[in-house]
Length: 76
Image: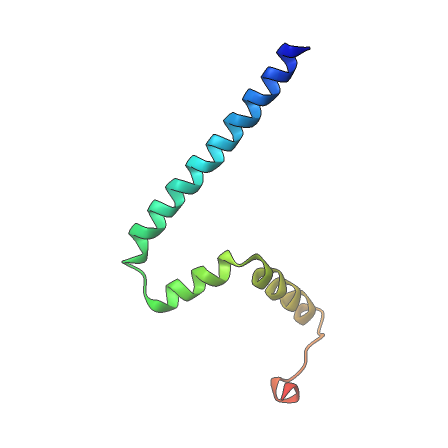
């Protein structure tokens, strides 16, 4: 029983370490690339990294595809 528990802990630790390493590499790449990106590129990247915004945009695009649209003037 102890062997199974040790295996599960090791697997969990390996997964956490892999996720941490992947995140660290992503940050390094982003820092390097951010010097080459325009302000518009950075803004787009910021939007794409925001899950809430991406979900709202996806929902809006689906509604528009179904013809469920509202002129922007009516929002003000």
